[in-house]
Every structure is written in C-alpha cells, then in structure tokens.
Length: 68
Image (cartoon, rainbow, N blue to C red; front, side):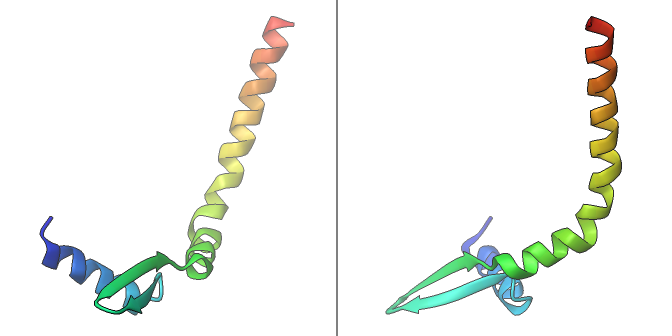
C-alpha cells in the first residue's frame, strides 16, 4: 500500500473519530480511540456473541458429558 493510500485511510478514520491524531513537531502520531470502537462492538458484534457462546457452552457440556 502506498504512503498516500495509508494517509487517506487515516484521514477517513480520523474523520469518523475512530483514530486520535497527535502532532509533535513534524511528526503525526495516530492512536485508536477506544470509545467509538467499543460502541460499534456493542451495536454490531455483541448481539451475535450470545448464540455463539451458548452453542460453545452446549458443545462443551456435550463433550464433557460423553467422557464422564
């Protein structure tokens, strides 16, 4: 990926407030912003986590019950 491609992606992430930008002289440091990322996780990923966890727990109980 070119330097300009990376810069464009960082600009878009900064505009969405997913990345915090800190200037230090000529350097620009980018850090992940955990707040919006946590909100996205709660809105988009968390609803799918429950059935998967329940299925894995059921599988564990099935396997442990078969070996006991």
